[in-house]
Image (cartoon, rainbow, N blue to C red; front, side, top):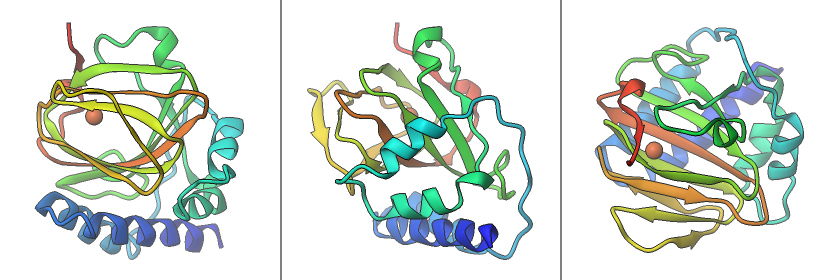
Length: 196
Ligand SMILES: [Fe+2]
């Protein structure tokens, strides 16, 4: 039953990223749809942001995908995101889960698709990485900067694109943030670094 819910989440994310109109979004949608026929892998989790996830998913303004996340939450394993240059106090407020991809609950090549939940009042500093990335905001209006532009608020339902190696940052305000992310291109997670 939970697997059916997990597949429902993958389907909702496929629809969202297919609507992006970019090759990377189309590749993510294809991988997400194919994942429904592939085995689920249990993954070790190192963090359990249960209360944070519940708060984000039950927020009055959350995008409908939030209900899909909640319904399969027991199948999602989280880890703190500890990229190069991130301070421990920030990493402890960033929880990520790869759903589909080389290291995901469902194995796939060529893309990574996952979720990230972060606490309120968390400044994810400007950073960059090799993967071309798009975020779907599921819950929480945070402020984002891309390519040196000003910080701008993006509400649930927004898609935010980060070209490969483009500097970008996100700071949450009074509410937690939940988003789905997808990477295409060079999927090397160790390419991540905070801008000096
Ligand atoms: Fe990113």
